[in-house]
Length: 357
Ligand code: F6P
Image (tube, rainbow, N blue to C red):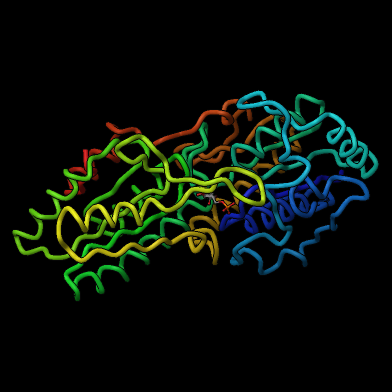
């Protein structure tokens, strides 16, 4: 048996751990693994791939990024149609399918987020032996309690807040930290809670600048002269706008910039010296945490198990400390967002975090 693996979409700490898990489990079965380069693009003739042996994956568990490369652009990202029915053109799929057949790939493991898994599902519906592995730092995929990469991103946010706290305290400033997550506030919520943020602004919760400013003034009045604010990049401004711009090189809208706007308004409303800082891709790079290494490796091993059982069209899923699987269709085209009244939010409010609502 020969199986393939590819990483598609934005990179994410823990991708190499998945590859490590896949190659390890497949080697145990006496199977050969082909790693396709740069996402689905590597499937197109003449094919861009390499055979992965155990020796190729030794020591990669701790590496950020992906040894296979990834892309969120290219032939497979140029979908036709809109929304849930956007599809990769059939001629591209047929070209890639010939490559897969020629190489004798009996299972293809697609490691990706919502967009890439939607492509994976299209290929499965076209008759391909697809197995999905969920990947995103945003932790916004439905049908899995957690994706690898999220913990590493949160850890970077916590480190950022620890650093901002000391400079904020020294200057009695308000520090606004903008973090990633697209339309989901998980990174902001978990990072803010673990890093001791005083204010957290999320895409899921409408906020008012006046309420946040009042909270900061009250803190000031009782002697807490510095305030840490975390704002998720997808947070809607009170007029409902998300700060995003079209990317000159194509692809999805690029989010970012809300932190500066929030800092500016809070400075005007509170009169306090305020600075903004954007963590950006620091959250995606670097070594994965121990949790993400283990989760990634377990996901990779489960993907091979699904291939062994011929359970195609399924996605590896993490459910209450247990790695299992669900139909890919259960996970795509629906985001898992922060529940405003959920237990985590209740805990965050109970420890004194202001959400500006
Ligand atoms: O989906 C992961 C993510 O890091 C988002 O949090 C962020 O908005 C986006 O990707 C950035 O994408 P790019 O690397 O294409 O700028």
